[in-house]
Image (cartoon, rainbow, N blue to C red; front, side, top):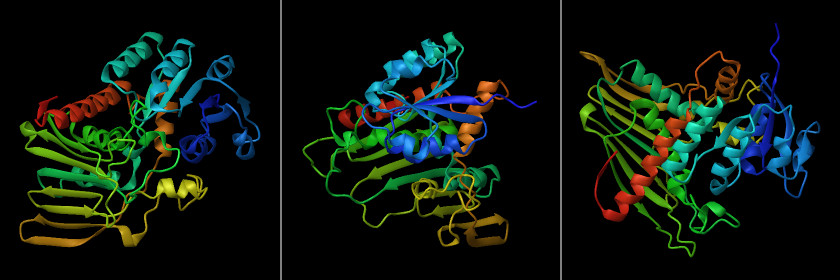
Length: 354
C-alpha cells in the first residue's frame, strides 16, 4: 500500500531553504512541497511552479493539507514560530541553532510532547561524509581507545558579509558560536553524550563594528571516559588545518576539507544524482595506526558518502510512526546548553560543569 506523501510548507526562501531544504524535500518521495512563505517575492515558484506562495506563517498554517512545517527564519523567530506550528497540530523542523536559550529549547520539547507532534532540529552535519567516516572508525575500534577529537570548521574572511544578520550582535543568537558551534557540539554529543565540563574562549578577533563573536575554542571534557573534544572555528584561517583529527591509543586519523554536499546542492545536484555526497579521492582522510600487534598501517580511508537525505528520511519515518526520531528536541537543547556554558566560561575564564 502506498503511503500518503507528507505535505510540507517552508517558512522563508533564503539560502538555507533555497539551497538545502527545498531540494532535499523535492527529491524525497516521502514528501510533497506545497507552500512557501515569502513576504515580498515569489522566487520559489521559479524552481517549484506547483507551490503556493503565502506572505506569512498564519496563512501557511491555515492550509489544512500541510502536515510538516520547516522553519528557516532568523534565530530569534524560532521559538514563537515553532510554538505556533505545534499548537496548530502540525509537525515541525527548525533550522539550527534550535533556540537562543536552553530554557526556550526545553519548553518547545515539552510542547511537542504535549501535542504529540514530531519536533526536530536540522542537524544535517550528522550526515556529513567526514563525520560518518569518523563514526565508522570509532565503531570498528581501529584506533583503540580514542582520547581526543579535534573538530575544526574555519575559513578566511577579514571583512563583514553584507546584510549578514548572523554577524550583527543585536540579533539574538548571532555570531559564530551559535552558527557553527551548534554543528560541532552536536556531532560530539552524538558520539559521546553530554560532556562533564565545558571550557571556552569566545572572541571577536576581527574587531568589526558588529562586535559579534567570530572565533571560538571550546573544550568538551569527559574525564570519566578519558576523552576530550576540542572544537574550533574562526574567520581568519587562510590555510585550513584538518577538519578532523582523531587520536587513539593505537594511532590517529586526519581528514582535510569540508563535506561536499552543500557545495553540490549549490550547483543544483541533488541526492537523485549518482555523484551526490561522494568525496573526491584526493580529499580522503589518512589513517596511521597499529591495527594489531606488529602490523602498522598508513594510508587513505575512503570517505563514507554524505547523506543529508537520511535526515529527512528519518523525520518521515517518525511521522509515519515507523522509527524513533534521530535528532530530538532534547538533544538540541543539550547543544544550546553547551553554547550558553561556553559563553559563560569565556566571560568568567573558568571551566564549568555541564
